[in-house]
Amino acid sequence: MSEMREQAPASTTRVPQPRAGEARAPQPTAWTGWVLFGAVMMVLLGSFQVIAGLVALFDDGYYLVVSDQLMVNVDYNAWGTAHLVIGLIALAAGFGLMTGAMWARVTGIVVAVISALVNLAFIPAFPIWAVTMIALDVIVIYAITAHGGELKTQR
Image (cartoon, rainbow, N blue to C red):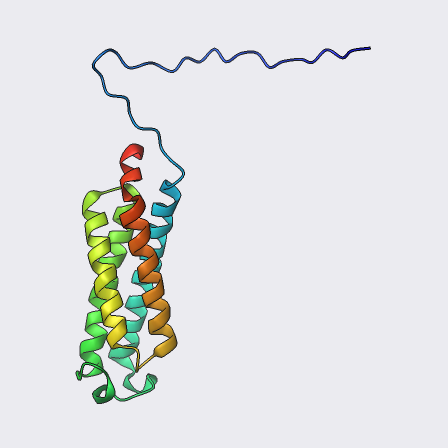
C-alpha cells in the first residue's frame, strides 16, 4: 500500500521583482556574523582598554615592571590615559559597527591597529594581557576589513 504524502501548500507570498533598470538589493550573506562578532569584540576590547587604563592610573604597583623598564619610557599615568582614550574610542566604534556605519569601520580599524601597537609596547608590564589584546585586535581587524561590506546590505 503506498502512502500519500501531504505536501505543504505553496507559499502565496510574492517577492516583488525589481522593475527594468532598477538595481537589485544585494542579499545578506552569512559573513555579516563576522562583522557582528568584530563589533562585539571591539566593545569588549574597548572595555578591557578602559579597565587597563584605570588600573594604570590608580595603581602603579600593579604591573610587573616599573615604568622606566617599558619599551617607551613614560610613566603609568600616560599609559593609563592612552589606554583609557583608546578604550573609549573603541567602545564608540564597536557600537557604531553594530549599526553598520562606515565611520565605525574606518575608526574600528584605526583604533585596533593603534591598540595593537600600544599593547606591543606594553608587553613588559603585563605580558599575557598584552599578547591577548594584540591577538584580539588582529581578529577584529580581519572581521572588519574582510567582511565589513556585508553590513551595507542590512541597512
